[in-house]
Image (cartoon, rainbow, N blue to C red; front, side, top):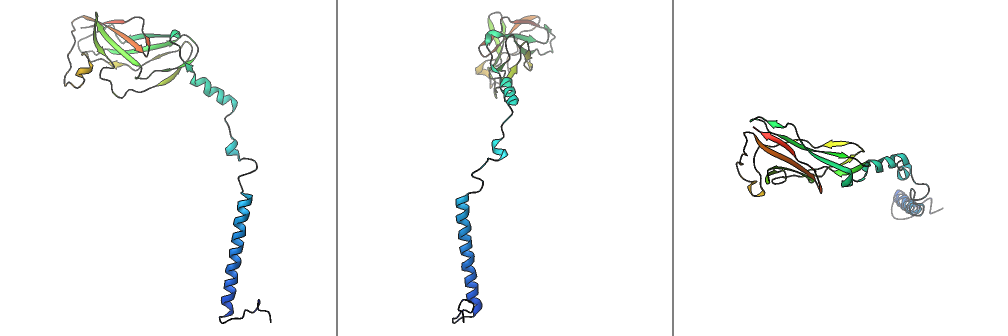
Length: 201
């Protein structure tokens, strides 16, 4: 009688069959692992579409064009802007700057990290936007040929500024009653050629 079909031993035949089954499954599992290591599915052959997908040439060109090259100051015109030429006693002058590109499309940092607005009276500097500035940010923008961009207006509260008085609870009001002031602006190394005059009543 075959001992393979009819196991001989002190234990019941079912015990030996279970042992053989477990050993057989273990051998199969080892073989499967070896085959997977050798074949390594997914590592060879043609890459998937996800790995080989690239932007169309036209899209890449558009991206490069939109990012632009750094602007050349000689191609830019910067001017100071006020919303009025004369202000009543209760009015706060709205001041800003306008940048015009006279050259090829380019990228310029139009953020508050580069903006400086200065109010003067005669030879005296009265107020500067960067004296007590906090949270300045960069803002790279593309400016096309012949295009102009204007910064959001700042409401000047008619006070003097200095870096040493930023924590003061109250600021010194400037003289009004028809007094004349001038606004000049700068964007990095680029400065407005002229200042804009305005009156405070």
